[in-house]
Image (cartoon, rainbow, N blue to C red; front, side):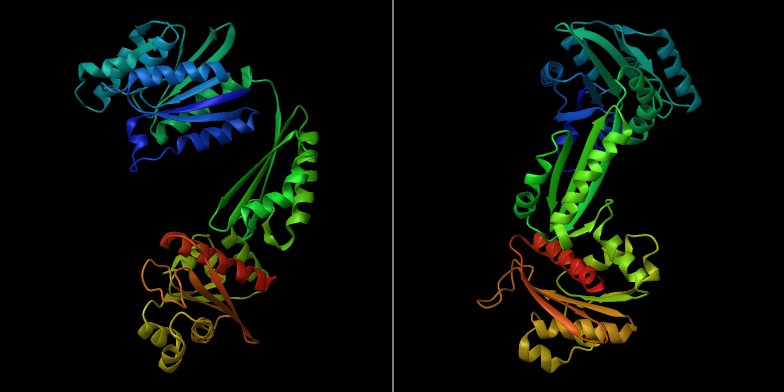
Length: 414
């Protein structure tokens, strides 16, 4: 069965509010064998919302609308669904009483416009919302001769998610044909997306019953494999077979077979080797340390580090000599190596990481362009230095540099 999620609200079309509910709902729907084929964001214009609903009902079996169930003039989801299906709205006495009771409990005035939250679409079932004043609605109907299911849920995440879990999922399990889902997530670092697809497409195209999705961001490739079958055993067997072949093709680009982050894998290898890490970051400004410390328990292997943006702090915190800086420049293989060695010795870590580069947009020269980054990894035996050139704007260069640095640590530990 195919579904669509419509997020309602003009605020979703601005940089100030992001739709996170749909990711949660997608995961829950996939678990019961429902594919989310479309996700739409519609502003607070009734005409636009009616059109989006009618389009969705042509192409999917299940339509979920999030938001637009509040008391204000621009909360129009109930009205739009009723118009799209040529149905009426009725004001339910039980919901009116619930709204008055809620206002009395909170000792709040009860404006007249609040009562529109008690309007229920003809034929719909009210879904209790213990965390808010706007209930959800569940409507099964015929549209153009086909059975359709519409679910209306409130927009705030603290209302949407609990209501969906308690009220919608049990009902969905009764109406959705029983399917078993097997899912695996593979991750690879620093392989270009086009190269990954060239390697893997001939393999995953042999498995038409397994949905393969490739997502790429800042040097990270995520491959999601999903198979839906009447038998859990068969679904898992198909996913496992495909995953094994893809792992072999990716070779040492692959860093995770179970969806772990790169920083989790780095910490895993550090723990396995009973090793510790310290970092001296210039162009990445602490991004590497932030990623590592976002993992619970990272203090067992990560000692810390320093953001050494200026030459003075490179000297003060990582013992990089002023002569070295003068001779080779702050962005150089020699300085990256000195940063790695200096922070390792200063902290007593097993491994030291040094990174320096030109993130831009300023600071470049003819010989040192924007995107030039040097990364060094040092242990007691030797120091390895790497030169990389990352294209793009400042944030992109920094993200790629941090990803590359973590991957070089992983490979060193492997």
